[in-house]
Amino acid sequence: MSIQTVAVFCGSKDGLDPAFLQEATAFGNLLGVIGMGLVYGGGNKGLMGAVANGAMAAGVKVIGVIPEVLTTWEHQHEGITELHVVSDMHIRKKMMYELCDAALILPGGNGTLDELFEMLTWNTLKIHDKKIILLNCNGFYDHLIAHMRMMQAQGFLYENFEHRLMVATTAKEAAALLQSF
Image (cartoon, rainbow, N blue to C red; front, side, top):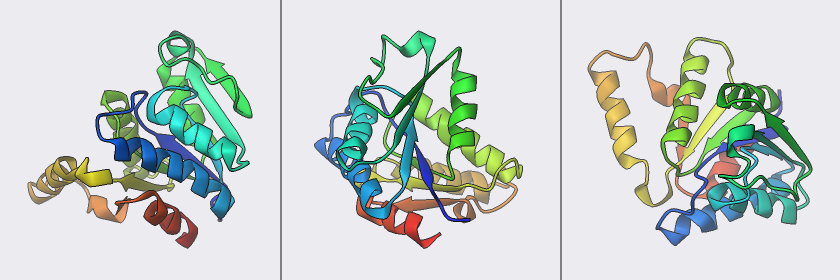
């Protein structure tokens, strides 16, 4: 099965490192180059807005999924191809999973980690077999990767998580991984 649509999970804030915003925008642009659509959290702020705007500038179909409670907080994006306003976070995640063939995780906060770990858990449980890429921009996820390796070494994971979670350091590397699947 070829990858047609990528779900991007990331922060609704920019973060302090300018590279985060640059890589989010670059990835959105690269989706146009590699011919894949975007599904994301539906906001127009932070890394979410940057990846959507980059994708729209590249002529990519962009689908946003945002829960009602976040329409003002994350400022729903009015300029994307499709916007689905759903009742809660659980429906948002489920819809995003159903609409994508693979997922990319950019820097973000608690919500981003929740989405990453739910994707990994569902993948491990064979609920889906979607490819998951962690974009470890400027070492943002170094400590998380080290912690996951410790969980593996301490016997808390059923399999090597690195079989399910690929790590890229740039948007260009992430796009190349997506093309290789």
